[in-house]
Length: 128
Ligand SMILES: [Zn+2]
Image (cartoon, rainbow, N blue to C red):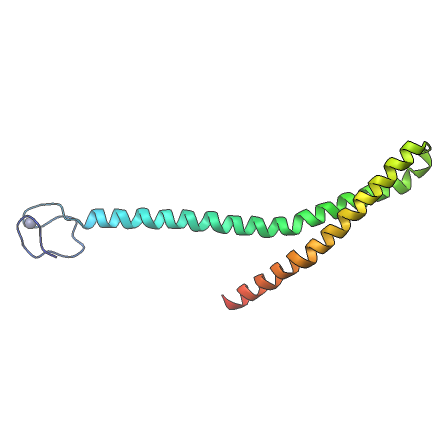
């Protein structure tokens, strides 16, 4: 490149002109590039964090739901004799229905969400 002040040809990477000492535009370009790179890195890392969290929660939420239902069912079977009133029995029946629904929804969710996610992940890893 050429110096904007004295017109002498100078190195493309020079920060200032060796002839007149005038600052070149190279430093600004480089800083802008670094800023853009940093912004891109931050953006990419925040997006990839979201991807990872999304994948983790796809596994965790159905599993948490199933675990809660299993805990509920085991609590019912271990304390059945303690529930004697009709309203108590009714409430337990209602809870059983909710836990059964929770398990079914989790399993269906697992099949329609998590299995495709696993397949896509394997596919992406295989292609990277
Ligand atoms: Zn110069």
